[in-house]
Image (cartoon, rainbow over all chains, first blue to last red; front, side):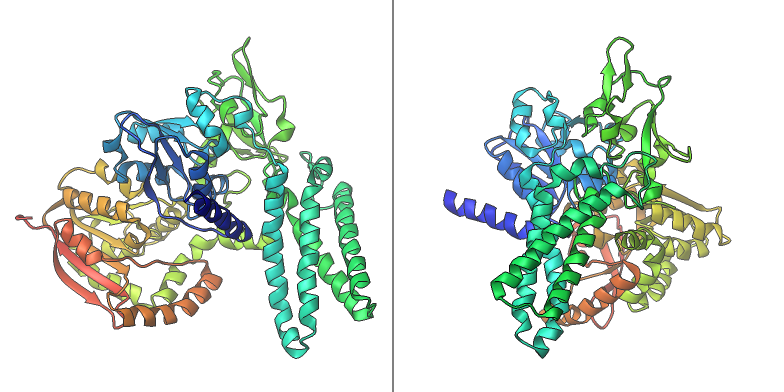
Length: 385
Length: 219
């Protein structure tokens, strides 16, 4: 039984990692984990199938109630930041899943990364359920619960470890390879020997994306865009593209050695396709990572401003910031942002502040009020106009 | 490429109406027109999932006072603009709220409750909850009106729909980034919630339903 479960777990992980670029919705509503009673904790997550699959494994052995809220099949952070996992999804699942009859407490644990999209204050007002912001990663949930719902500093920070980097690489690889292969199909029908070349190019794309993401820690300092920096032309970014081009060129060289063929057209084809792939991966490389903000849209680059007059030192912003940018000054009882350069502009702090003490400002000194950030999700991902 | 894609997706609510008209092959307007014949002047009407306000406007033209609820603020903005440009801006109240908040309304508050292409977006739990509260907030002997895409009970029709729908869904999505779903077992759920179904009109393909159900005393 355990072996079957393990293979099933791995199988779903592999398949859904390949198609990670696309939403995979699961059924919303109530799930029982273990044998919970009326005092057991209540957890909530999104309805991205892979998330639920991994969460269930991470919390096995714990008796709890799990609510799946509608996020249109998208993961917690993207859905919350893009406005799909919102107050309505949470209110709806709390009131329609029958959870209120199953437990005698009114505390619900939400993933911290849902903070850009869900207002704890609204949930409490409309359902009388109190929101507890859980840890970022599902694997920390057991110790978080054991620790009486107290989060350590590590539990509230996003990271981009090697395993996740490879996951992103595989996601890009599969998507780009399939597109590339579809493009080849008419030519393969015309000249069947091209099949070998098309498949070899899939391997080449695998190499480009996996090596690029493995090397990401080297690129990170180069990719970081400073506020007001020129986004469109950036010398440091060209270095990254150049390094990736070198990786691609190595692939081409290896291929020519393997097949012992130096045909001019083959080299041209390989170079053009490799070039396009490097450009596509680079186009929004920072946006594929959880630790750097996407700079695809220059007009969307804002920074968070703290209004010290309004700040009352609740510290909620510090608790929900996934990049640990903010800090509480215990002397003045005000929040400051010593690590503002790490901000990925998710807007969680702005959305959660009960006194509207934080807001966005761009380089033209335009201000986006907390009210607008909440309503239209005017963070990095949200809608405009 | 990503930029263009994002811009297209963002303006999707503005193409919602067009998308729905393609997907329902133009029958949506006629269906809404037929259903709102149930609405009388001065009626207190609730529109669940009013979206861009298509159905809301139909009821307003009949002279009703309409409360429209939807969870999407962008769609509501479009509805607001649409109604402001019409002659009926006085008698409408648009609220950003989901079906889970239907319990905020008073018992026996509405003369008519209507919903167009919304029940198919709800989960089973949500749909049952909605019907339960519809019954509560609707006046005695008043009607619930539903227009939605449905799944036929007959395999042949389901299969035919499947064949027709796939290209239609792809084309509509490319043109307007809009898609709709179909609701299963609607009649049964409405009956189970304690309504008496008065009339059902289905199209030839059996994939679109216009349903009128009444809240009767004995139920």
